[in-house]
Image 1: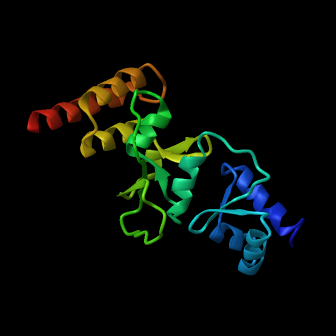
Image 2: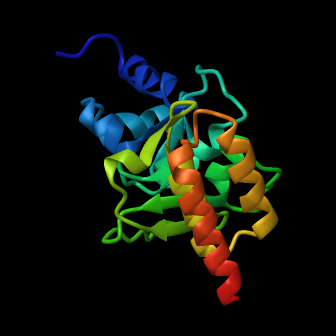
Image 3: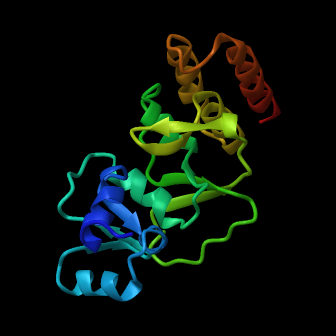
Length: 189
């Protein structure tokens, strides 16, 4: 049974997602596509990307761009990853020029608007993902491993290992393994 207006329903979802909601999430909440189009034409919602809408009556944050990238994929298993996750965890001085998102191997995204995103295909296990600021993201050990395998600069990886080891984000049991992976990568290069 519906409680409140359709816009109220969308706002409830958007409050947990940096002001954003997808078309499929709206449908799951019982909001008919025609109602979503009406709200768009009346300026009650704004199109943020293909299949993603911003609810203007919700607060925005500096991390909206990351949430948008994850939602834009249309995959509920998508998460922030690689250099973008490294930046989010704030354990390096990295400033990526594109947003990295990992989606399952079998998933293909054929949507417009992803020019600022780099999609990686990997079937992540549950222990490789967590949450950061309400956004799904790879864990620090997984993030560093991905950055090693995709060629992130060595000094940034060493910085991540050093700074991450000083926190509970990077367990000591992972540091040696990741340092070894980095050494093997650099030796092979």
